[in-house]
Image (cartoon, rainbow, N blue to C red):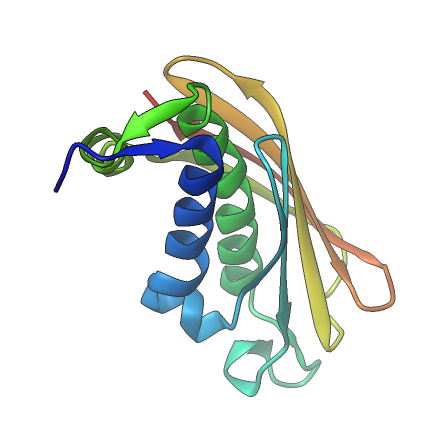
Length: 156
């Protein structure tokens, strides 16, 4: 680790890369980052045979839905908490990231997860010093609202 100072823009890029492309489970889901800033995030993914939770109906497994929504909400909560200062050292970034995580995730499954491409859109609801809350909606490629999530994260 070093004492190199990172700008907010670089911190957001690092967090996005870490959540989407460096976490093996998220890579296995094929998550892609379509939009990301301190107030919102949009994560997209394609349906894959391994994601089917109900073979007879050919719908997404609830765990896939919850996982994608958790990633989108986590991006917003973590990114917001880490971007409140103009700069942060690499050491401080890694230290803070190691203490952040999901506290609670509530998923409302509204419709069966049918479709070929899905979008999880997250917005920040509350950004405190210790806890942050985000709201996420999952839509399919026909713009049907599949699920909603309220997620709480330890950020401080």
